[in-house]
Length: 204
Image (tube, rainbow, N blue to C red; front, top):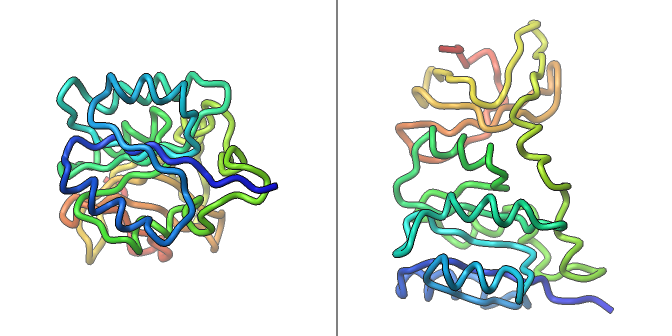
């Protein structure tokens, strides 16, 4: 029997919480919302969420500190960072600490739902199946170097310049050789973009 996947939303803005809840109205997720890290710590063990939507700036601390506690779980949830003050350095640090994705506010429902794990609304074998990585997998990914078709090596954390989007930082590498694509957080746009044409990127 399938179970609805469980989402813990940690957001101190009442108005934004209402907006994000509305985004998920047409799904069958179990949703719990809290406003502080203290409440989040309690909910993490009691609720055992599959996905955590985590604000960075909270009344009683930084959401970045919550990442370590969640990653220490035997079966950690997917943590999706939400912030209105995103920078490339913050995005890299969040991914390094184990975040699954990084959203810059404001974002719409479509942006949220394209994240892996939000498409179906419920897992076919129970909520826990939404977790697709073992503890520490994101940290290992940051250290990986991928070679493109011209022989250049790329890795998360590289600072780059694009001829259209400006400067940014590589968050992830997808594929190898001629199929290599980079997920880049561009400073000017304040969001991440999938860049399929490596020839347009210059490493800084």
